[in-house]
Length: 177
Image (cartoon, rainbow, N blue to C red; front, side, top):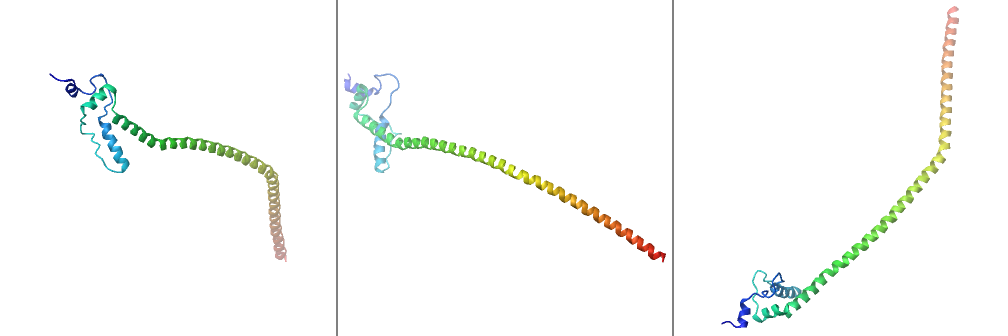
């Protein structure tokens, strides 16, 4: 007949409570791997190897939950996780600060662009107001120039006709003689 201690060796550790549980067999290996990694060494994690448990460890886990080594490993794993995620959290804080800063800068430049566009429109209106009389006087001067060129051209044409007439008269006087 089997004794109670032998009976526990044959039963799985989770036999008392049915349902899914966290298996801590790998965690012990992770603990040694994390400690070696912290020291800079390379350690075989042994995830592919089944972990053999001592009978007293199985009893402790089945009755109380987790052993002291498992709790210690979990504590250290949580500390490592927190140390690893702390820079990420700070980076995320910086991202939100950067987004706020970029939003403020965007609003600043948007307002400046609106102000510059208004100044540009006002300067264009002022320029148009100043240039308009000059354009009107330029148009008047161009019209006067065209009129004067027309007068010059008509005077030249008259001179050419008069030259022809004088030439014809001279030729007729010369022929008469």
